[in-house]
Image (tube, rainbow, N blue to C red):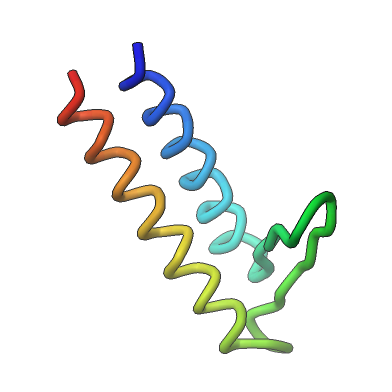
Length: 69
């Protein structure tokens, strides 16, 4: 049961990464309900830091889902 939760979390991060690659903008979550959008051209450092952190979260969540099966 818990592996399905981790798989769902990984899927959410993969969707966010796919949208970032396709559009060139990534949606970053802040504290509470605050959201920010970073552009690859306008703010490249923040974009790539967020992109790499989302990729690491997707990888760790997918690995946890596989190991908990």
